[in-house]
Structures are given as C-alpha cells and as structure tokens.
Length: 408
Image (cartoon, rainbow, N blue to C red):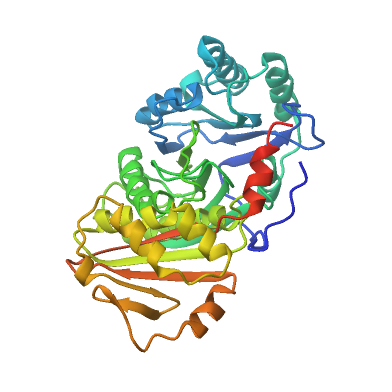
C-alpha cells in the first residue's frame, strides 16, 4: 500500500529520554514489509501504570488482559506488535499474548502480569507464535533506540511518526513526559484512540495516575474522530518510572500535582490531534467547538455528531459552506437542543444565529476559510453553560482508496 505523507503532518519533536525506560525494536515479520514491527520498552522496577481501553464488545485479548493488569498498577515492560491486531482470534489469540508475557517476564525476572501487550493491524488473523517469539528474541538482544524508531515501529497505515513531550516542576524536581501514538483510521472515541503511550520519570501513585489519565482522556482522546469506527484494540497507557526521585504524587494535594496534570493533559491533547492530522485521506484538520449546551458531556456528543457526519465531512472536503448539514447533525445527536436558539458559524463568522440565517451573511470569507488546511466550526446551542471542542478531519476519496486496499 502506497501511503503519501499527510499534508497535515507535523515534524517529530525532540522527545527527552525518560530515565527508567529502555527502547528496542525488531522485525518480527508480521506482514510482508521491510521495516521493524515489534517494539519492546523495558521499564525500571517500581514503575506504576494506568490505562484506558476500548469499550468495544469485540475487544482483543490484549485489551482484556490489559484491563486486569492495569488494576494492579505495576509494570516492567511494554510490547507492541504492528501489522496484526490478534483480535477476534479466540483462545489461540489469548495464548499468543500469554506466551509473549511469559517470554518477556522470564527475560526480565518479573511476573507475567507486569508485561503489557498491544497489537494493531488486521482483525481476525491469529498472531503467529513463531514470529512473535523470534521478534522478541531479536528485540531483547537489540541495541537501544530512540523515540522516533519506536513511533515508526508501532504504526500501520500511519503516514508519519507521532510524538509529544512536556515537563513540570514538582517542588524542586523537574519531571519529564514523553508520549508516542499510532492511529490513522478506525478512530472514534469510545474511550481513546488506537495505541498511545505516555512515559514519565515522575513518582506517581497508580490510583492517582489512573484518575489523572481518565480525566485527561475525557478531554482529548475521547474528543477525536476520523471515521466514527471504534477499534477492537484501542489502548492508552501511562507509565511512571519514579526515577526523577521527587516526592510521590499521591493526590491532588501533593505539591506539583496540578502542574503534572497540566503537562499530561497537554501531551494527550497533542497526541490526539496528531492522529486526526493523519486521518486516512485527510486534507483538512477540523476543530468543532460547541457552546451553550446542557452540559459539557452533551456538548461533546453534539460535537461528535457533527464530526462523524459524512455529509459535513464531505462538504468540508469540497470547501462547501453548507451550514444546513451542521444543523442536521445537531438535530440527530439526541441531545437537548432548541432550533430557535441554535447558531452556526465557520472560521469565527456566523452564518446563522438563533434559528435563522443572517441576512448580512457573506459566504465569500467563509469559502476562503474552508479552502485552508485548518478549519473551525462553531455551534452555540443557547440553552446552557456546557462546552466542548472535538477534532476531526474531512472525508475524501483517499479514505476510500486506503481502506478498499487495506488487506491487499
């Protein structure tokens, strides 16, 4: 499959190394491609972990096991397989994950439930045990690598590697966060998006880390959509090695807790937006802001109704300022709305206010706005204080071409 780099791509940032992590990649050969497709991140003893996972009723064994492991709050390694999702593969799929966990646990002298596994790619194909075993042996013997190598290795239809970083002061100690993510299609927020990983050298209680990750997820990964389809494998994990040797972040009263959360939120937001920028076939990055809703959650659902509408997305692709399609998407959302209070705009220019078109509305500047790569849609429901921003992309012929050719 020939994948051209998205016009919305961003350069891979210089991510700081995180003390307590060792990054390695190898070629397991899950697909017929000339690239690394297995990632192994070794984590220091004492690393805590938090995770959010897909709510798909057809979740992979990796997700089912990961949910249980995350409750224990400790981790020693992460393994990511690219090219094969190992989802919908029955008992054999679970055995493949358990084999990977056992193999890495033996090498690191730890418990298997401290080894987290993610797989991404074609659904319904059993992860080949021989290739997984070979790839892991190669990774365990490989030289350590950098974040960009890992970001490339976890990708499938991604056209560019994605990463983000931040830092925060916890008292007198500066801590760092580095994150990577993969995702391009089958993106809809039924918790998060595809596979994302954040690593920090801060010392964080696992329960508090889980609380912060869930909160950050609600405003980032759960606010993006490419195509309205939720993956069987969606996973976001956050690992805290504690190697910065600062004070333990135990709750919101801990010194620096707010600063750390702000950094985590920023990394998650950047990673989420990068996935949208790499949406399959995307030519435009779209931010949809909904205000005046019954609640923040209601505003988010209205925003997603707009962002998931093929009619809205194709209008954006064609540069058509068809605000009637936005009205349609608001009306079908199933959320509180009042036709006679609804306002719709593009690029900060209102086309309709309080249930009717504005007589002075000039479509010329809006058409110019829609011709750019960055598009905004504004909706005010006029019934409350709820607000949310959702990020999506346009829907083009490129999306069809990529997905019609996905397995061939």
